[in-house]
Image (cartoon, rainbow, N blue to C red; front, side):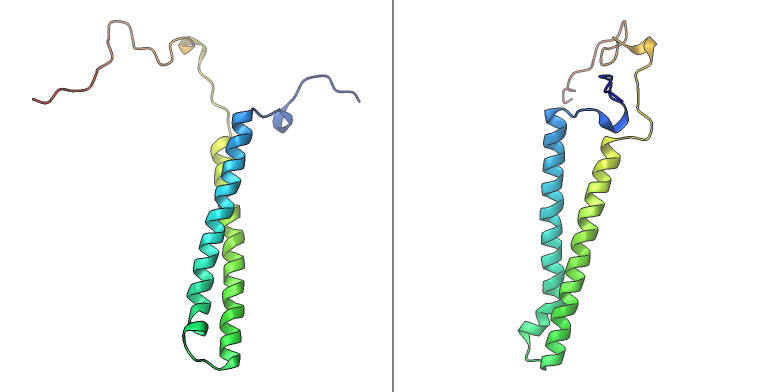
Length: 120
């Protein structure tokens, strides 16, 4: 089967602005997830380094801190990217009705847009 030159659904090419937005969102997801994971690790494993604890207790705190940080990292990345995906691809594409095309963003006839209000 050959390519007919038409694209449908997800096979559409993305513009440079869309690719840039995706790149920024991935970077934001990774950075915010790393920050949240570091805070979680510090909160859970911090007492192991701040106080003189036994070896087993210290090990348990460090391991549990690492697990909590890893889970939080994954959850944060997934939640940010899913939210971005929902925001950029609505379930039903919105279209401007034919009767409004050419008028979107223009004031109605007989009305002028209001400027900034002057103080009394």
